[in-house]
Length: 359
Image (cartoon, rainbow, N blue to C red; front, side, top):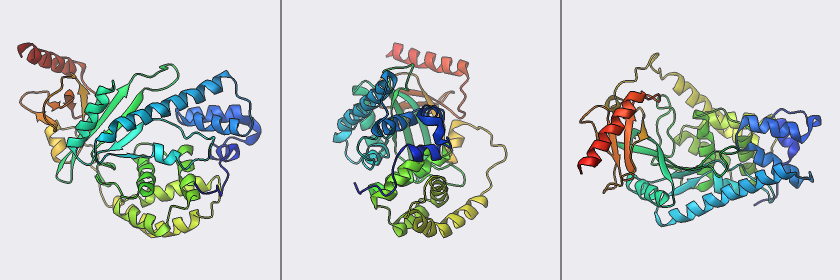
């Protein structure tokens, strides 16, 4: 890792979180907790690094963060025998952080090159005690794309979320309207990490962790403006990268930021104009599962069974309503809306129970 050009310290976090420095680390930690469930890990590790004596609560928070990171390292090792998997953001971005600081540890994001290897990875994770909990399906590049979240119970359910690995056959899903699904990742890991951070903007607003990730990549010297700009055009993420640069600029004037901003300016403006010309439906009907998949819209799956099935594909069962997804790690109820009718779920559970009883 290159020498840090801009100190990653409590002062930077005070500026990013808009907490006056005279209010001290307690207020900074509270603001971090309100911003993101894991951001306090970074704040506390910085405070300890700068000489603040930690109490039992702070020590426990850092211990839990280390334990969580170690568990994800074990799961990455377990997945090593599945060729072609790419882990983005977490571990590789953490490698750019200065010693003694802890990048917030949330979940683990894994991109699979195809559906067969996604289900192989899912089987490995299930063998490690994971539960297939959330399924999303959508179509792009002429094939079904799969997102599966595999969960483990939280080691401390009062203090932190469950352990979560997200497997997906598509690197970037966009907004399913103006920004299409882009299945492939850049070959370069730094670009893959940077664009994955930028893609988060389709799920939520950027916050301090995203800005610090960008800062660490700028400090690494690995972001070549022309290469970033070219990738931003291909993956349609120039506006998000400029927005992320704007957020970082509220806290620090990094010497590498302005050349990158200039390289992105034209493509960001062009992409913004292109998106504005795409008119999403004013009131989109939910439609059926089949209709949504035919038009490239996502559908969602709720787990019904963990019955392992032979094969390496998700098979859609439209023979009766509700639609079921038969997968190598279990059956899921597919719905066209994120809110599920409890009676529909009960009927699906009864249907698969009857099937298993008849076998």
